[in-house]
Length: 94
Image (tube, rainbow, N blue to C red):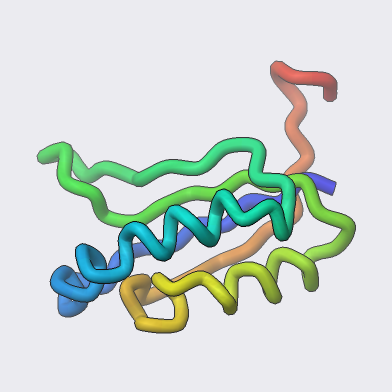
């Protein structure tokens, strides 16, 4: 199943974001789940305001578990994290 994680940054944790950025990237590249795409969400000024991860997983619980281990989640760099099953209908192999 494809899932999407949408996470919005906590503006009070900008210093923690820089501190844990490399750990966050390592986690996303760990191979614990199959990340299809990931990257930052940018606001109108081009400043990072969160991130999106699209992944192939066996269950939503797999993504929830993976997300809970993300250094950005553990250190509250994100203020909110939402995880959804995603069924693309245009593009790819829908």
